[in-house]
Amino acid sequence: MEWLDEYEKLVIRMNTPRVVIDNAVCPTATLVQVDSARKRGVLLEAVQVLADLDLSINKAYISSDGRWFMDVFHVTDRLGRKLTDDSVITYIEQSLGTWNGPARPAALEGLTALELTGADRTGLLSEVFAVLADMECSVVEARAWTHRGRLACLAFLRGEDADAGRVPRILARLGHLLRGDPAEAPGAVAAVPAAGVAHADRRLHQLMAADRDQDRAFPTPAVSIDSWAERGYSVVTVQCRDRPKLLFDVVCTLHDMDYVVFHGTVDTAGDQARQEFYVRHADGSPIRSEAERERVCQCLQAAIERRSLEGARLELCTPDRPGLLSDVTRTFRENGLLVAQAEVSTKGDLAANVFYVTDAAGNAVDQCAIDAVRERVGTDRLVVREEPRPQFDQKAAPGDRDHGVGGLGLVYLGNLVKRNLYNLGLIKSCS
Image 1 (cartoon, rainbow, N blue to C red):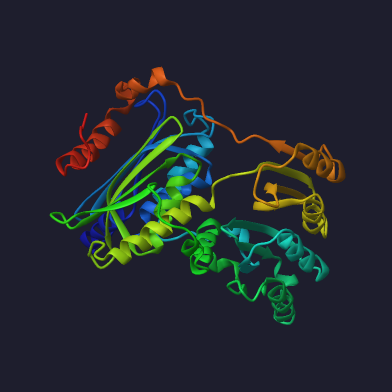
Image 2 (tube, one colour; image 1 turned 180 degrees about the vertical axis):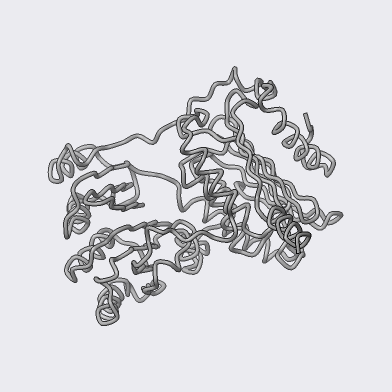
C-alpha cells in the first residue's frame, strides 16, 4: 500500500541521523551538527568518527528533548584549521548519515585479534612480538597502551597464521610471558575474531577497565560529580589539559558504564578543556551512592590518563618484513627505552608504526639513546616527531558569533540547542 510505503520512509528518515556540515557559520571552526531520534550510541559514534580522523572538537553542545537529540560540534584539524578537504567532509556525512549501529572495520575482516593484559615491565612488548615472530605470525595491526604499571594490547594476525591448531600454542606461550610476579594481578590473553572488535581504542579502554587499572588511582579535581535532584540528573564535570581524543575517551567510558548523556557542553580555552555532562543511568536513575560516585570518578580519571601522550614520539616507516616489530622493539629495550604506547599498521608492503617511548622510570628519554636507536634502525626510517599543536588565535575567538549567510540554517539549529540548554539552566547565555 502506497501510504504504508510513505510511512516506512518516514520512520527510516526519523531514525537516520541528519548531518549538516557548515564552514560559513564560524570563522575559526567547521560546525558539524547531528540530529535524529535518540538512539543509544549515536553520540559515541559521532565523537568516534571525528576522533578517528584526528580532528579536534573545540566546543560542543549536546541536547535532547524527549526522544530527539541534537549535537553541535566545533571542529578543526590538528593544526587548528577549518576542514577544507571534500573527501573528509563527505566521509563524515556518509559515516554519520547512514549510522544504524556500531560499524565493523572492513579492513579487519578475516583476521584474528589477540587481546593481552598484564603487569607492564621494560621489554614486555618486545617479548610479545618476539614470540609472535618466532611462531611465524604476521601482525597486520596492533595497539598497545600502558597505564599505572599495567599493559593492554590488541594484535591483529592474518587468519592463516592463527588457525584452530596454532591458536592454543600461541595463547600458551603468551600466557607464560604475562604471568608476571605472583604479587601482581595475573595477566590474561585471549583470541577472538577481529570482526568482533568494533573499535580498537574503545576495546583497549574496556580491557584496561576490566584489568582494574583505575583501582590504582584516586579521584582528582579533574573529575567531579554533583547531583541535580530536581531534574533527576547527575552532573559530571571534567576539567583538565586538552589533548587529542579527550572527548571520545570520556564519552566512551560513560557509555560503557551504562550512563546516557542527555545534555552537555564542551569548551576549550588555550590548552585547557572543560566538559560538563548531565547523565542518568540506562535505567533512568541518577548516580545515587557515594561508592558509585567514586567509581565513576576513578574510571573517568583513568580513561583521561591512559592516552596522555607522554614521551618521545617515534615514527617508523619502512617496507614490512617478518620479525620487523620484534627487531625494532628489541632495539628499544636494549637502549633502555620503554614503549608507553604503540600504534602499528601495515598498508600493502609498507609498515607505518608510531611509538611513544620513555626511559625505564617513565621519564623523558635521553637524546643519546634516541640517536643510538635511530642509528640501528635507520635514520631515514625512524624519525622523531613533535605532536602537532594548534595555533590559537585569541583575536578571532569573539568572531565565533559572526555568522555568514551560508550558515544561517545551521546557526538556527545550533541556537535551538543552546536555547534548550539555557532554559534548563545548563549554560549562562544562549547568545
